[in-house]
Image (cartoon, rainbow, N blue to C red):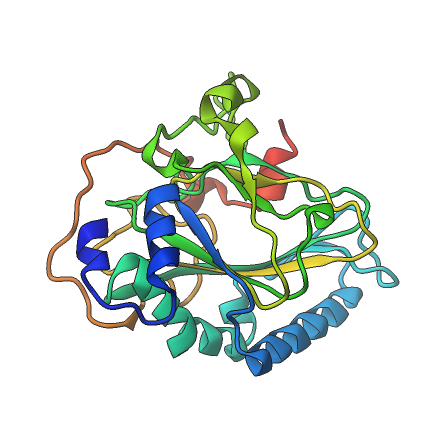
Length: 294
């Protein structure tokens, strides 16, 4: 669906101003939008998995562990595929609340793509370099949206996500280095053209919702506080968007229609997209491991 088609449908959760900002700038935010009880439950599940990670010494299919991880001080960079790790996360992913937000941004027919729970730990770690999402998982159109839920207050000091306004309408940059190794980040020599100096930080209180288009240039700085910044993320697309490569971190639910109906026709956006590595053959760790190779 085109933005005009999507906006012709009445809003479910977001305001008209938030929807218009998303299509005009490539991102939007909604402070304190998450119902308090749902936020409490997500926090509880987050704590549960952090406790579970204490027994691990290496990363596995669900846990991406940081270099400082130990049983005494867990350092989980990402909970991969949370919808497969526990049924609760699939309940959230398919709830009227989250799919309503997705429908406001991709249209009434919504397809699930992936999910993750990221943690930015104190001490300046987990810097996420400037990147776009779609080069890692290209689709036939550019409807995919990442919807995030802030589990705690996000201030400038904790390294919030920062987005470059209107970059979703610009160039898709190479995420390979000069030797054609995948880094999952825009080359340093391209950052000026990408406009990273104009990036806007998406701060907000606990329960805030953020939404980022798959073409939007974004990243985040290090956490300079003594608090951990957790961020639960779900990715959706319009039902008429189809991936044309293997997903880097597929789930058992990837491709399921979670709202509305399956598409009868595919929407083909004529704008090209770079080809990522063959994830089915070489595998994918996380954006943290990819960017650490830069």
